[in-house]
Length: 317
Image (cartoon, rainbow, N blue to C red):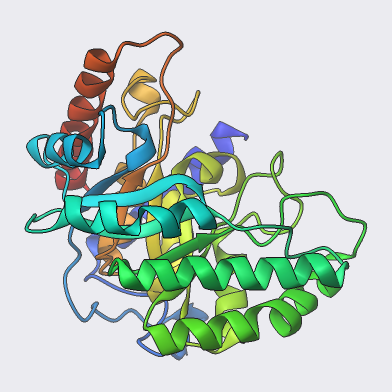
């Protein structure tokens, strides 16, 4: 990423912070009427709130209860379900339900592996994607989570981008979204950086697919790590998603470690400003690693410091 280019756009978008809270899209997901070539600025329906979360597989602990105890003690109020595939999730529903019961801590979303690759031409693979994603959504609904994260395509394919996009919209999403609508949960698309996917890399592109899918059960994820390489502005990326933005991932910006471990590079204020401008109330959830051979007690200290860093920068935004 050309950091000078990012800095330029941060300065250019900084003027938004002096305006009233605004959204790029209204409640229906449509862009408001343009004024002088720019979207009309309207206040969000509700002010933004910071809900800090972490993937539970990243939290040290002997069991779910011990992990959830630590998260609550450290200031987190959301837990992102991670750690296995669709079969693992279904098997662990009773333990997860029991461990979360009676807490202020709530489940945010599931980040669980489905089978296959949605962009592949193989109909057997497409069927596997649909079936396993529906299973994950069913488990998310049972756990009262908002929904589940999906990556439309990881593997390299020779299929042209427009055809890939149409196949995803017409042959993958309809059945999944019909299932999600019935359950009252959301399928949340995650753009990745170009080293991890050739299909969906920018938040605005995911929002455009969500718009074309025309379903209340589809949304978008913004990941600070991937955005570092693909977006010119964190604020601009989040504004481009508007109400489609349902979840945010956060990690250190140079090595994808726990936030704060990359020092001054771990600045999320510009992005948090964008979240405030669109009235975001989803979770900002840690998806990150640790330095090698880090003991569990030090991992807990890192997570506790990360919660304080996120809260401080949110207040600065």
